[in-house]
Image 1 (spheres, rainbow, N blue to C red):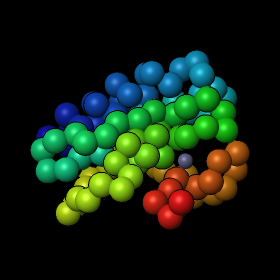
Image 2: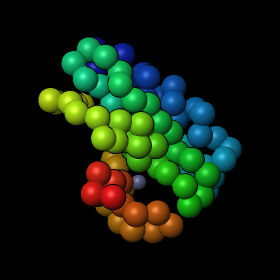
Image 3: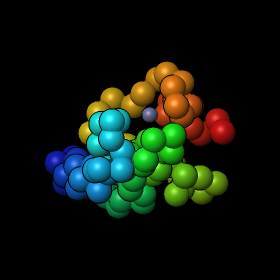
Image 4: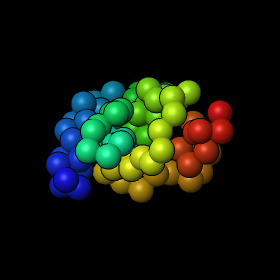
Length: 90
Ligand SMILES: [Zn+2]
């Protein structure tokens, strides 16, 4: 199943180009058990990265355990947007 979910994240990343440039085109899939509950991709500059794009779709919803599949390690710095590592704090 990991491969299927990673392929879903890769498919999302293809939607990012060209609006995301010069940021890398990332994709993300968030999974609850065997079900994809949110997907996202890198938005235009100064808008959501892939992880934040997906997380905003499930914000406020309750889950027991989620897995996130991302095509690149989530950023941990504040640049044009806040770090994706603290998206849930916003
Ligand atoms: Zn990020």
